[in-house]
Image (tube, rainbow, N blue to C red; front, side, top):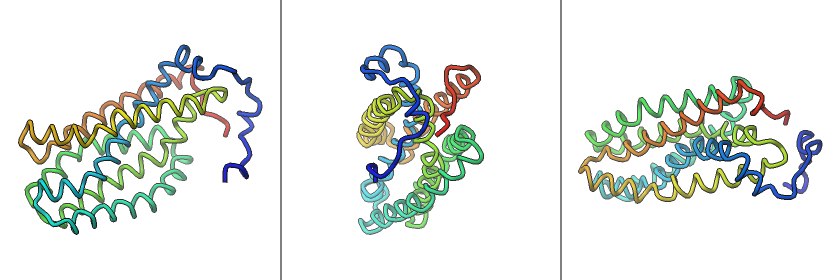
Length: 224
């Protein structure tokens, strides 16, 4: 597929650098931190969804089939809704769409975890997983384009690669271990929501920073 795709005009017309990694790390550190920030909640929710079967079995005392059925539900929602949310972000704006999803994350994560903990039913688990997957789809559908827009064409691929991989490694890869520790330390089944709210605040702060920078000439949306 990549071999059959043409590069964007902004990339072809840009002056390229022979040292993109050095340029990104020395001159665009704030952009890299912004990229890490905006992906934080998305990758945390992604790994939380992968942890759902274990959470359902160990914490909610459900059977394995229920936990894995919830994971399938999440996969279906992500597959169907994400392309549509990407299309929608072209029309209403990426920052607005992602900020709305982030605010909903922050306001509803704890209540839905409380609901599933009190109810303990398979239906409650499906509601939790479906809601997480839906919000992640709305947020993530706009994320790749936003990450590309905050870097200039000459260092776009390098900046996105560094921001994505650092963000996923730190806030996604360690998510299951952090969630297990939180549950053990607090004794609360709602503990995973604490980590998700924390990552949501990081992403909202990154979105606010990007919005502020867009009011100046430093960061402009690409023409691609």
